[in-house]
Length: 161
Image 1: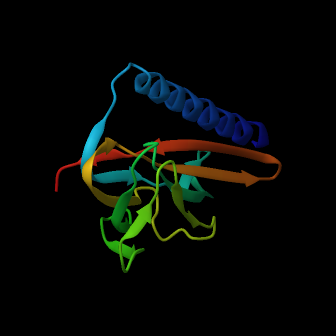
Image 2: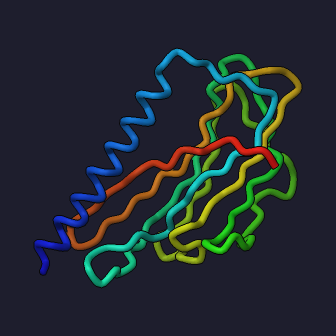
């Protein structure tokens, strides 16, 4: 039974690494994304299920917003966190947040924070006065227990609201 659990964890790790590598390969196709602002949906997993009993495996989650433009900043106008059913859990900004050239910002949710569930997500809205390189907005999930651990990245997806 313990071996099966470890194999399941290994499977999740390999799948996560494969998905991340595939997405990174797609990002290097030479297409440069430029924008004056976006609304970005970012999947966030506060837990995943493991084993035949579908036991929840708690994960720490970090939303990362990275300005990849070397010459211009932008303002993050809102960061909202939603649960598995699409209900707003928390609004993270009271006032817009400035991120300078090559700067970054993150929000960390501890492993014990399982309010979001398997289908949790962030909606991040940002804007600027001029066209810039679109930022990288993603979630990094990390979990470890009993000497075993895994991590994976969930990229943001621009949406129309």
